Each structure stands twice: as C-alpha cells, then as structure tokens.
Image 1 (cartoon, rainbow, N blue to C red):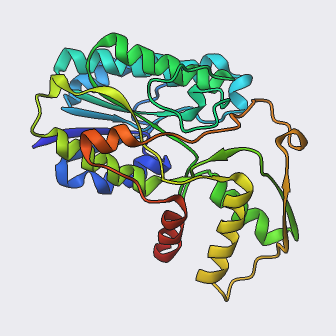
Image 2: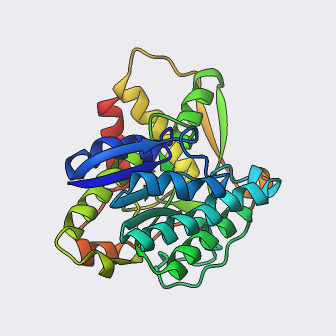
Length: 294
C-alpha cells in the first residue's frame, strides 16, 4: 500500500484530498506545525523519516497582494520548498504532485491557455509559482504539476465565502466584471487528483512527468460568479436572509489591488482528459453541488 504525504493540512484542497486519496494508500497529513515550508532547511529530515511513495504538495503562499510586500517568504514556500521536495522525490523514487496556478500567465490571451503557452507572471505570487514549477522540472523527479484556477470551497479563505459574508451585511456589492476565469471547486480538484493517481498506478512511476491544466469547464467573470453564489445560496437556504439587493459590475480599474490580476484565466483541459480520462464538471454545476452538500 502506498504511503501518501499531503502537505497543507488546513488548506481547502488538502482538506478534500484527505478523503479523496484515502482509498489509494495510507495518508499522512501535515500542516505548517508539522512541516513549515517557510523553513526549507527543515524539510529533508522530516520527509526522509516518513519515506512516502507519493508526496502531494497542496501547501502554498496564496496571499496574492501581500506577496508584493513579502516576496522572499512567498518564494521560500512556493519555489524553494517544492524544489527540495522534488529532490527528495527523485532520491527516493517517489511521485510528487504539486498544484500550480494560472497566475503564471499574464492573461493577455483571449482563448484558453495551453500547458505549452509561454508563462509571463504579473506579480510576485505568479513568479514564485512559476519558479516552483521550474525547480520541480529541473530536479527531474516523477511529477505531476497540476495548474488550476479560481479555487473555492466551503472552508478556508476564498471568494465564495467572502461574497457570502459581505452579502449578509451589505445591500450593495460592486464586483469586477472584466476578469474572466473558471471557478474550480476544491472537492473537484481532489477527486480528479485521486483519479489521475489511480490511473498512474499501472505505469512505471519514473515515466510520470508533466504539467497538466486542471480546472472546471466553462467560464465566467467575478461578477457572474458572485451573482451565481448569491442566487444558489438563496435557492438552497430560503430561510436564511442575505441583505444584498444589487450586485453591480465594475471594471478592474475601479478596484485597484497591490498585485495585478490576469484579465483572462481560462485553462485548456484537453491534455489531462486525453492522457488520464479526467474532466472536471462545469463551474456552475460544481457550485450547485457544493450548496446541495453544504
């Protein structure tokens, strides 16, 4: 039975992975208390002692705006630490699964991004995630780099929970409408990861290498996503009151942030479908399922 190590215990994807990967082996889950990726010098001894066959790195520095003020810390967690994990995976012939982001791109395309498109991150967060990808590839271990986008769930910090919190107290919300992406449920990511790993089971692990887009089907704007969240919540919980009456679309220029966001964040998922037979549901269907299971 595989010994699986999941990093990022309190994160929304890692939380779902604990259940999704349970059928594939013995799962150990570490948070920052067990292994703080901000201190890369402590990683090797801890991971070597456990000797996992599969390392799933769902830990990351994800405070996109704060990263502009803390680029060194962001780089340590998102770039240096994955590189060390990759070296350990090569050393022990383990498989490293690592999650990346559409922020490696600048968002200037108007059609879904392919894995082979040239990265051009706009800020410190995207640059750190790209550096992490490259460190893993350079280490030449068995690896799956899964790029996803607009991740949300019913725990942690994410857009869905922020919108519900604001909608409970405010009669009006102004939401950016000229940034487009595919909201991707953390549970869908975890289930897809389990499916991919199950289908890697019959392969020589050393041949498993590559970057794969892994995001929900379809696309919407932040405004469209916020509107759907509020509508679905009201349908699912008619007895719970939200104060919001108007959700007003605004351009990103009216909501300046320290870090620039890609205007277009849609990923092309044909590669992961062709190689592993995995396809995530449409974003709006996933949102409906989330509320049905809330």
